[in-house]
Image (cartoon, rainbow, N blue to C red; front, side):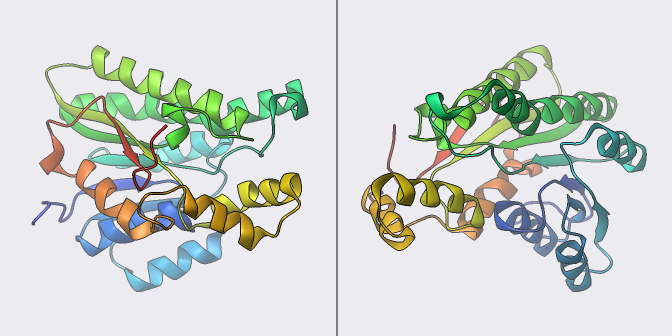
Length: 253
């Protein structure tokens, strides 16, 4: 299927590894132009070397206000879509968290997404088109043990996204969330380590425990996630908006 991405311009955050890198690569394979951000400049430059005429590298911490302010000045006026993605807060139970943990998690999971999207929305409105896609977690459908910080703030992102859709109407601007379950990326490491410490088992045993809960019998792959993300970011997904697309191998919550 031709997703009609050729020469469209996108911003992908957290593009140095995992789901963000997979989404950036899938957009590039479909001949889009992509601005990629992450703290790991070397990993970004490696991706650019594979697609030298399609990639713009902007290294930095997307959760940092100063970086977002500088990023705003460099975005093209005809930006078509954004994949909003970054790592999650530390794994912890309620009793293990401090109020400082909650403040940190707010900045990591919610605040910067509001700041960035509030800047992009007028660009999309001026062009009467655009795609917002937030990468959150299957925890928006039900809490995941040991992830109280993520469980709480990712639900807030869903509320923000759904409100945006209601406030922006009669345009080709969409906003959606992908809620991934357990995927085989480095993001799962903090959860596996927490499980191993709590249950006095090895990390490999913790991984097997997670896999046993998933009906398809394995963790998800980043390229599988990217195939859904790229469609939602494409002109072909103009009727998909205000939705949470759960990608968890049938686990459910």
